[in-house]
Image 1 (cartoon, rainbow, N blue to C red):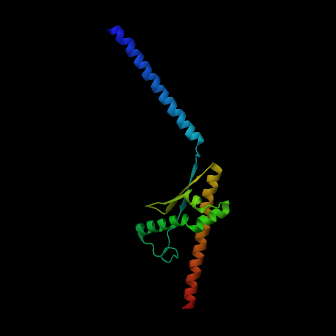
Image 2 (cartoon, one colour; image 1 turned 120 degrees about the vertical axis):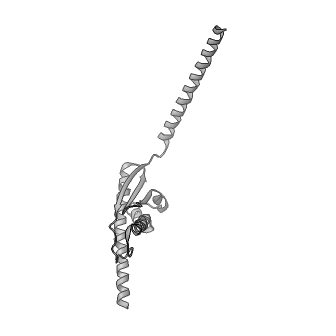
Length: 161
């Protein structure tokens, strides 16, 4: 009986090994085809360090302690993807679709410090770096413009009264 069992067992093990190999090779080829054919994106990370606002700051009045700093950092991280900043980035890079551009930019505030992490996605290294730099530069210039507008409004209000 053992002579009849061994060739049958050997045949079954050979078939099992062959089918396992086919499955592994098939999934490897499929994965490679998907990776090669997909729009693989490059991610670049940039950080924006905020200085803690003073009590008379026009952007965020009266920051006191860690909780207020966390709220301020969250507020400023939302400004990174605001229409003002995204519009400035789009104008600089010549992009028309603000919705698609906004999807390529993720701004995350730190919960325990004054740092905003900006993660951008692009098709290649050069585009990703250019996008990250444009976001940081546009954030800086739009923040300065916002501070100037709020300061001018405060001065105008004081002048009227």
